[in-house]
Amino acid sequence: MAITKVWIDEGCTACCICEEICPEIFKVTDECHVQVVPDLNKFESAIHDAVESCPVEVIKIVEV
Image (cartoon, rainbow, N blue to C red; front, side):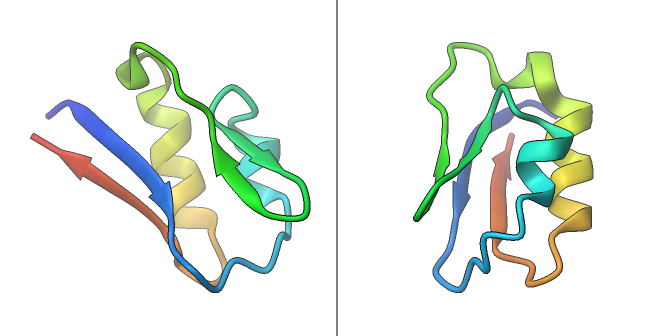
């Protein structure tokens, strides 16, 4: 499956775990942001690790 979209729902605690796992995609500042990159699948494994590691389960992805 290919990842087509990544986003962070409300409720992020800015723990920075996602950014530590995949800094190419996640940036934590006052608010958490997902970087726009042309090929999310290049970072598929790290994105999945970030999703699984999120303590408040607010990182969402769409795969097709």
